[in-house]
Image 1 (cartoon, rainbow, N blue to C red):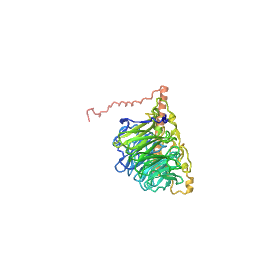
Image 2: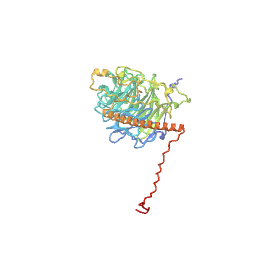
Image 3: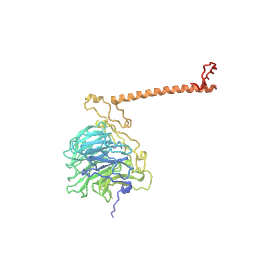
Image 4: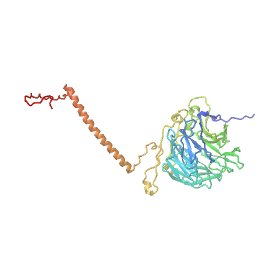
Length: 517
């Protein structure tokens, strides 16, 4: 007698549910670019979507409470001269977003807390290095203000956004770079390239530690690092069948498992949740989202379920775990872009009867604190990402996490002509996580502005002096009047004019009569 034991997992019954249309975002002109990008980036404060824009590139930024039909004249972030290809929110500052464009420039933007009230065209900093279009921007998971960019010039640049300068440049790819991913601590870099190879790179040394052909197909592939060091890839077989594989970094040539999915031609984007070890596969042009669980037991990648929608998707964004609603046991939230201009919100939940906080579903997750500064990471230090407990720090306001602080990105330019000795004497430019909330130092104003302010201050002091003298005079007068009232003496009345003395009678004979002239 034989029987089959059902695999035990708390995520076997994860199901997805699309929110009502009035709780989604409508009338969005999603970009029609053919670039293989998700076109969408989400954090607990904002939703950013790349849109069509005349005369350059732009993307729209919406607070999560601005649902419904979006006005056609809604303010945009539009400083690029070419179409925007990729956007990414900073994991350590929910108000900072980076964008790469066909104009070869990467721009970093500061979004105000309430969203945009007018079109934003002035970035915090412009990062100019690439000679061709920039199609990939990626923030470092643990180091503050460290940004990776990759362009069609086959170059990778790692920036310190706090100073606006390139820390590291990597030239180890012979062809177009499709994707890049940091490992859990940010010490290694995983890339995929048009030459069908995946590479594990030590970014600080600039060395390729290992490489292998991932998928035989010629179409774009993707690769991500899992939390415990494994490598998960998606791509196409030689017969153009979509497939995924799981590998170890020590043996990239020998995948642990390779599974073919279907024969669609859309690029699959793997979205990974490190807290639950779930991987969501979202294909461009697909109408489904497949999700899998990675476990140590064979077959290692377990298929769970498929979320089906009637409309094909053009792009997708995944909310960080600190933005999920723990009250409804929500473990993932997706923002799915349709060709009709609708951004559909999909909630993935685990059904539970209890309304208490489910600690097994919500282990400590990634927080918005940086573990290292840019200079510490560049010097060779590694650290685990900072984590937080959703039970203690999450504020459930309309079903989501609201960050309790707002920080401003400040950029300090270094002197490019300074000697090495001068640079050694320079103070630490990159702020530490503890000093990040301190107000920025005031800049020295120009001389003309200083002279104008000094003149205004002197005029103001003179006016105050005159006013003070008037007050003193009035006080003296009031004191005199009060003293008079206390003594009971009325103030002396003005004396009437003295009467004129009577004229003596005129007895002269020659006096004139009254009617004489």
